Image (cartoon, rainbow, N blue to C red; front, side):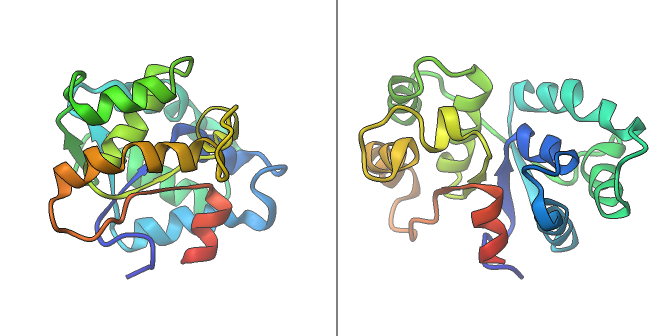
Length: 183
């Protein structure tokens, strides 16, 4: 098993898209990261309303036709998006008015709803979100030391503790580079 999580992880759509972008996917680290997660049978966290899966379908499925997919990327894309089975998915119930979502909405006011859901499902399940959305999620316009990522972790701490109880805090937000380094 890898050092990221034991069974589930939230992966932002942009990470899958960046498989094809050499400026972001230097040294094919995203291919290697996603392949390792797939081999470890790490499931994707998604919302129960289908919003995250809808974005995956609109933005990821069309990438299958790209001739530029590496064997590694093709393997991962087929595993996570190729079939109709959803064994590599864990649906998370979303309460748009609970404490956790309220804090996330306050911090990510101007971001897409899907971005807020990505943070929510990861934090609600006490897991990691892998994202390359530096503008909205990782850095943003936050004045906090660790950017918006730090602000999200700090300000949701109480709500996350209420959800997870005595379990160790495993919630985090990592870029694909950070996540690859932790493998």
